[in-house]
Image 1 (cartoon, rainbow, N blue to C red):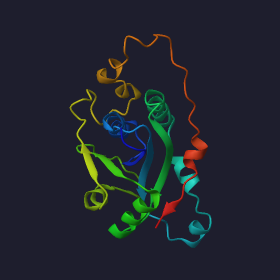
Image 2: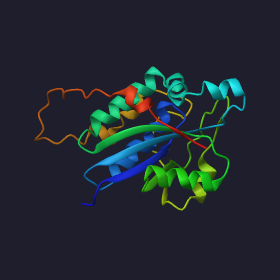
Image 3: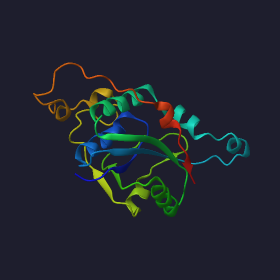
Length: 194
């Protein structure tokens, strides 16, 4: 088994984008994995907006109840494997800025969905071009064939795929596991990178 790893997953704050994370966690052979969810958005250049800029507020506005529930499902499913969580914003325009962010965060590997169409709104932008050119190893995960629901359906049920449900071994008790609480306040306490 290898040492602790830190992975980066691009997100659009839809439950569908969490499938990449689920498959990445299932394929990594490490005792603990720290997870960074990254969202790309342009920074408003208005002086007033910059004075009152708050990454925590931006992330809180983007987090939906379904996305929070999806994270809780994955945290419970991979409780022994997941270490720390953080959600980061990226406001850069250059590859150099992106690579500097990954180095600052200490990211070992990036994972992105090969066929996942990001549903971006407002000032958000797709991080795929940055991920394809980064110096950090980046793996494309093609999970479209595993998900029976179309990408347009952003349902929590899609996180309960047969491959996950059949993994419970016979030696484990069939009683409901105790639910792990996710501290969303600390996840929103992130910094943004320019």
